[in-house]
Image (cartoon, rainbow, N blue to C red; front, side, top):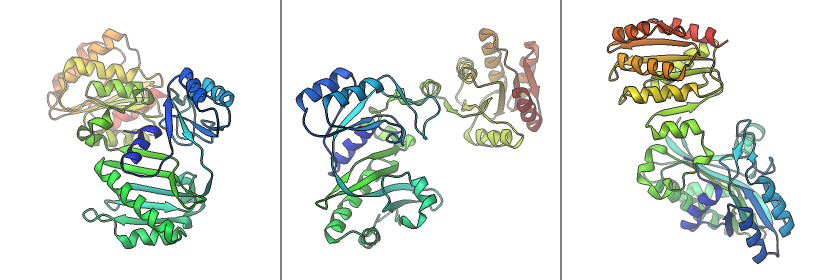
Length: 387
């Protein structure tokens, strides 16, 4: 789960890490009221969306007057911000964060991230703050400095000092950097984060540090331990189908292709998508119905898959271990009849009650349903149907 910048900075403040003062506004009237009371000085207005690259896309603006601020807010409220990290529709802007302006001397990059390759938390720093880490890793990999953290004793003093020296910090700055590192480490582990990124971590002209932007990613599997963080969840920033599926206890992921994919089990989903790719297709989505399922939920799951306008064909690949294949078949038939769906459907069933499942599909006499006992053939046919 992602947080907005202003929410993430509340975490920074909680851990005593340096941030600027700011307020979040949800209406033009709130922006107007703020600048009626704070009309002097320079302020930074930031659109709050779950995506990076806001500055380059025009979603961040430094303003020197109430008129400039209102013009910016009027344009963005209700509009969608498109960045290199969003899809072509962009993310809706419902909140604007107004923050103090600070003149900085230098910008650094600092992040903690789970590196699955080494099964440890990795700290990545760079002297080239303000840029995307992907861009830095390609254009200036020599500017990246990394240390891995021991899962039991966390970072060591020598590691923090080593990074400080490599970043070219002076003695005063190294002491401050050490405090930020330790605070970030506590924030990261206490809140079960998978990513905590300060970019840029700015150094002011009086050698103080300021976290100018902050991004966090929270492990969804640990959210049951963090009710306060869960209250910050902004459904407006999520795919509507994914949100609806989550409410039903289903796992749905939207992708970029044109083959809707319904499976049971995350591993089966991954291998099915790989095979679709192998035979020249692209999945539009995948929905994992899991094992605890009934006919009504299967019907709803099927409706979610076909509600994506990109879907030109549907592939259903079910391995009946816990779930019964005939139950899945009945749910699919009900969804096809109730919604008059004409999209071609390729179905492969294997395992528990598979024969009864095939019998139920065949007896439905729905012409756009095609059954296959061989997975490879089912996927090849789904790819052809989607063309």
